[in-house]
Length: 207
Image (cartoon, rainbow, N blue to C red; front, top):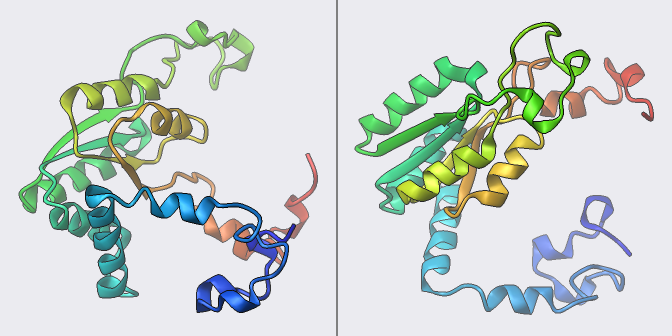
């Protein structure tokens, strides 16, 4: 089957259904038809505003500005900010920007629960700093807190891989990501892809 990442035809992008490859996922299921059934009034408006955001801010707005403008366009009032405690400074700046646009921002950092890592089976040797007290990240608690507060949308800032997955799984409100953490590349994970055939090629070996 031809999957999108390796496709050279890109018929979906041009809208030319007649040249869709025979083994394209679009031809092999009724997923598209089922998806269109989901565009009820609320979801359709959500998708419409996202499309407007794309056209109005294309190559003009930063990710932060896009996020704020989307929340304003959707008339959201209560925004949840789930952030990594290592990005406390950035989270504070973002909170101020949200409030400057008349939005209510509720924030919860990843160490929300104050529970030790031993609770999830982390041994002393497996800690980041063995011999010290380390609090586990608790994205489930972050999500449940926002669920209780009935946030309109939740914004994720720098949660670790896996922790972000758990947050998305338990969040009742729709989510978006304003910053993806990559400590090695100054929070620019795409740089690893751009350097994969050059500077960092020697690092890309099977695990």
